Length: 343
Image 1 (cartoon, rainbow, N blue to C red):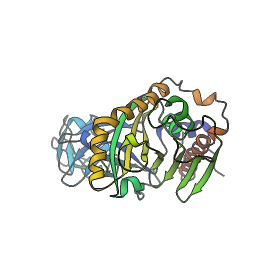
Image 2 (image 1 turned 120 degrees about the horizontal axis):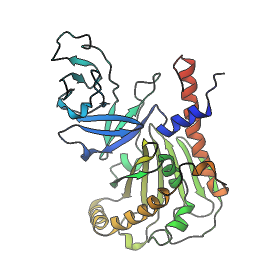
Image 3 (image 1 turned 180 degrees about the vertical axis):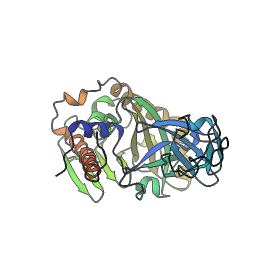
Image 4 (image 1 turned 180 degrees about the horizontal axis):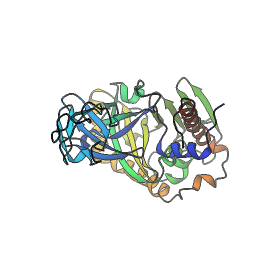
């Protein structure tokens, strides 16, 4: 059996496992000019052509200049340094300063498939064995017209895995967010269990439902989603429980891109009322809760998870970490078996 080192597994986990879709940025980040972003340890350039979003590694194959400082030309971008034109699939189409150059026709810039959903640009990051994107299935709260949602985006200092741990930990809501209008109910002690689902698992409190932050679900459907519900008091306006769907993308080992959709199942006049109430009254409260998470997680030491003493409430965190580690190990073993260098 092919073996890979713990160091190699840890390195891949820090950058983000491959062969999955990640949210890159809110759609409004990208207008008529290219932008440069760091995601999953890579520097990327994004621009819009006539029909979609193009995404390449932000590196001109001529001299390494950032393509993001160039000019978009539909399905290609011209480097601002010497005018080299790179198509959105990574192929060099023209070298104006030296027509007929050996660069022309070469595919030498890494490209990334993209999709746009619910106000967010997603990118597929495959490894050498899986360059073609897998299907991306959205959770019901983002796919169904029965739900209305608002995107919440922010960037935090710290490892993206701590954000996943935080959301896969319902019990922290009882303590850290105990002053919240929607999390001040329920017992301060609980016993948890995990429950299998077709696309992942649910981590939930036994004997308590529709009281507080009672459960979190992990879904592996082309992206790694976390989903939860929080019951709303009457002051929360019309509609059912408040749903949160989250995905978290590593920028680098010390920064994370944090995406939450705040959703509610409402229609007709109730949808309009909910959206008005959210923007004018509830959104500030939700940001205050999220800021409590940010302030706490940004003070974690980078190696905090190597000096833990977990207990029963942390079964969901431990399970999710095993999911990611298993994926990373399998990807590295497959690459090594196929003759690709693994460090």
